[in-house]
Length: 80
Ligand SMILES: [Zn+2]
Image (cartoon, rainbow, N blue to C red; front, side, top):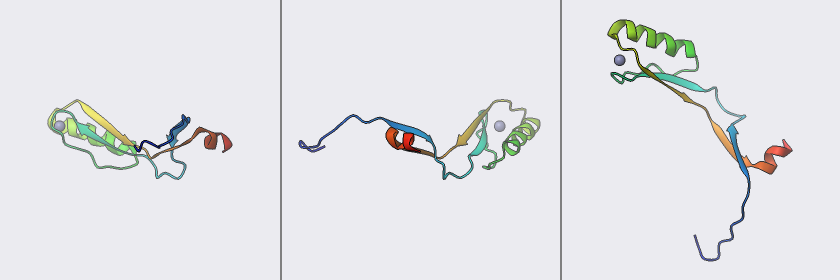
């Protein structure tokens, strides 16, 4: 930051990007680290975890969901 930089307080918001692709998800086994395929259908990752449990006896999972977000000035959001 240069000594002559002007800063002002501005309210910004963050939320889902209206132009986003569908959220993607996958499941990770917390016991061995194996991962389900990445996709947009929760049923696929849930089924993967159930089948993984059946094969390995592992029962703890971490679900990872990815959603595109966008930030914008609050006044811009209010104008929408
Ligand atoms: Zn596992």
